[in-house]
Image 1 (cartoon, rainbow, N blue to C red):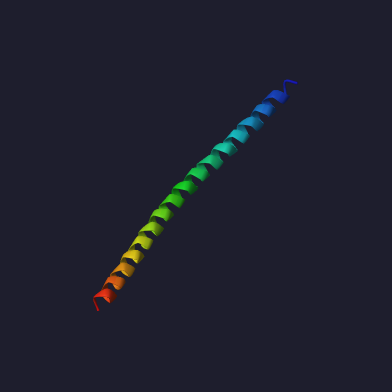
Image 2: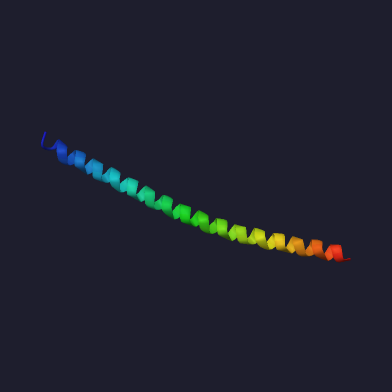
Length: 61
């Protein structure tokens, strides 16, 4: 029975390491998604501003 305890502890520690690694990847993925979202938002804002300028130009003609 004494041999089973270290084995169980080893499995628990390995599982904890996998959970921590998955959490770190998820945090990295979330940060990356936020950066991509911000970049896309900026591009959309620029496109809308360009469309507004074209619409305003057409209204003046």
